[in-house]
Amino acid sequence: MDSFTDAVRGHPWQIVGWAGNVVFFSRFFVQWYATERLKRVVVPTAFWWLSLGGSLLLLCYAVLNPHKDLVFIFAYAFTWIPYIRNLIIHNRHAKAHLDCPGCGEICPPRSNYCHACGCKLEQLPGARMADGRGREAAKSELEKK
Image (cartoon, rainbow, N blue to C red):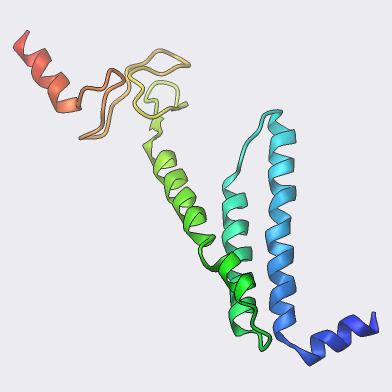
């Protein structure tokens, strides 16, 4: 234990490095728990946040540590890009879900009818219908009839 505390006292950046390792490794437990809970493979949002936080801490450690290692720096220099992209995609997908006015159920994006009660769902302007047509095209087609 003394060697660990001596190492941390000697190089404060090791605290950042170890914190990055702990945060990055903890995503394993988050993903495992979510998969076991739902009995199917899932990647929760927390997994991407932990990936981003851990990789940024490790990148800071690699860049700002007095013992710079270019291999270590390069290993974490670009990992944040897919993590941020996945968070953006997740956010976009979550916002695209529709609330059923009949039963309050959350329905998948681009659904025309609620899967729970069969109620017609209101699409956002510019959204695509389940058959791929735009909302405006569907309205104009109905007006022609």
